[in-house]
Image (cartoon, rainbow, N blue to C red; front, side, top):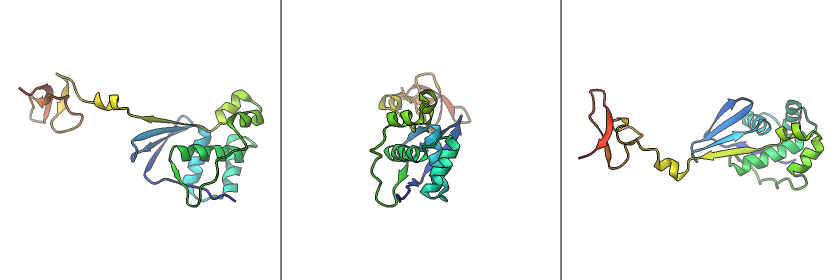
Length: 169
């Protein structure tokens, strides 16, 4: 029996239209889990089920006989995204089944594609981070991010500390 990984501490989870958004504050990343991987994440987070229990529950929730395959592919995706930690030695990636093989086994190519575990990860690029300053004439708040673009400063402050980005001279 393979041991199950645990959900990594410090992750924030939010349900969104049948999918799960995970915010990883440590890496400043947002992960969008599909329905299948979202169910696996939720069941791991509960922590009160055996591997067989999760397989059975996943098969029920996804209305599929391939609960073990869906679980293993989901665990592989969660590991790649660094959302889980293995309490014992990690299991080998599922080598005897591919996504294509699973779609073939499930039989319904259109519906099966919705079951296949997948995680989409979003990160802020350097260009986005650099573009996060406020331009000339934009409203700002003294000493509170986002800051005015260099060499601008938050000036012409009112009694509440609100101002406008303007030249420092």
